[in-house]
Length: 321
Image (tube, rainbow, N blue to C red; front, side):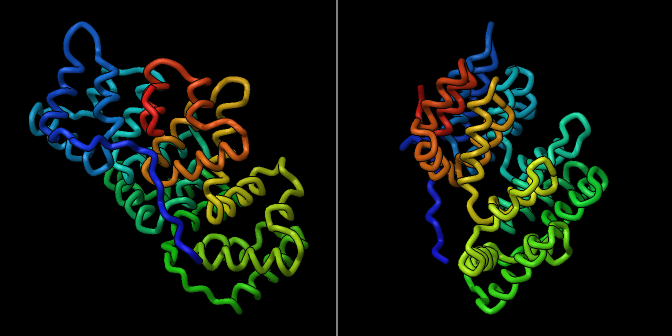
């Protein structure tokens, strides 16, 4: 399976100031009569994960304060959430988002599934380490405690597996497991142990091969065969899991379309996709979005947001307004 070239949207200036200079400028942005939001965007919105980590460490060493707490204190609303999520180390960010998704008032099984299915094995392992360091519990135990039934049966192994990341594929296994998946789906045994085992443990390359055989052998893509009852939350989540594992840019395009185009913007979903994918595959997601919606993603976001929040998102898309 060909490895897709990762294309990030983040625009890093050719001359990047030192972490000391950035920390000093951020400190200045917090002082005076009002916060200088534009200065914050011009710095943090144009620094990669390694640079942001250095800025946080330098800020703490220089001023004895946590940059994230100062951002939280000085900013507000969706702009604050976007800046804070972006400033977090990616592993810390994923840990924070999963923890939030396990809480009663902000419960969201889709966020858990999305993070478990679209991160590499090492990224997911890093998120689990960050989770334990911050919350003194494991991701698995919190998800198991907060979910039940088929949802627990799917989500716990999904976050617990360390998948093989290579391109090696067993064709014989792909054919036999395609047949097994078809049998279980035909029987409507969507929660069968073997179906969940294949989805939650096989490498993405192996799963792609299995689903290609499924399509060739049975004349239908698996997601079409799973569209029998879209009122069922488990079935919807299972279908989305397979999409995240095999065609993540399509999943994120659909998520953005729903976040931007429905009555009232879903800012949490919009912020999550932009901040978590800007350094990964946001360019491919934007291409998928334009192909599907006939409007560039940056223009769709600009039309649906405003103020500093809009400016921050556009900066992460590589388009300063």
